[in-house]
Image (cartoon, rainbow, N blue to C red; front, top):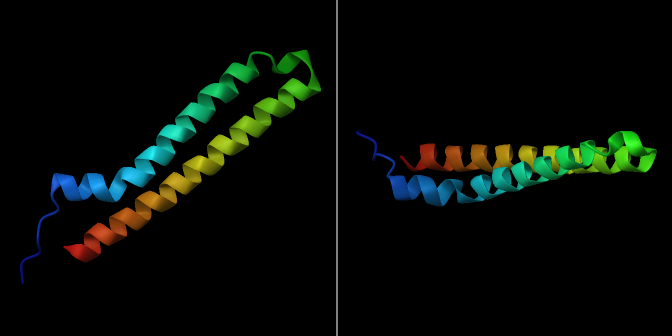
Amino acid sequence: MKSKPITTSDWHAATERSNDLFQEADRLNAIAYELLTHAAESPEAMQRYKNARDAADAKTLEGKKAWEEARAKLIKGK
């Protein structure tokens, strides 16, 4: 039995959520690194940097999970 190929539109639909999450992680990383330029100024500034990095890391993990779910769905649907 031959499997149905994955179309570009199927791929985009399935991975849209993970792409959004990765873009948000990139945005949070940019904020974190901007905060890092001020981290030496005070312990509070360093904490703001760490919080932003933690948020970015969490969003990246969420994106990876969403991508794996999309991948599994696409493979299953073949």
